[in-house]
Amino acid sequence: MERALPIQRSYALKDQFFCRGYQSDVRVQSCIDNYVDANALQRKEVPCFNCQQGLEVRNEFAGQ
Image (cartoon, rainbow, N blue to C red; front, top):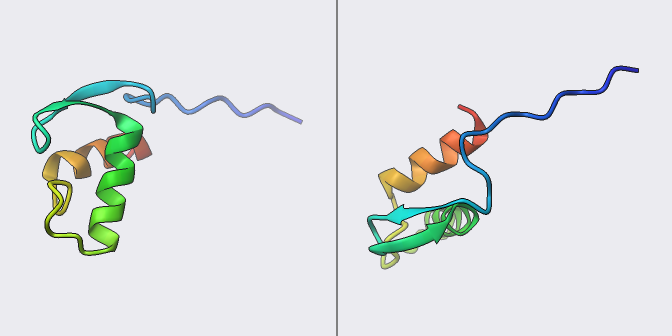
């Protein structure tokens, strides 16, 4: 049985970056969680709703 190689991602969940919506550093995991929650629940008052940067982070993390 062959062992699968780990997927190489540009981001790790613990990495931080500057969030334009919150104007502060956030972790990738927090960004993805907030982005998915805001858009799934249609929370338009949250900066993460329809956030282009959040979409890019999520897609990059997912490897798309």
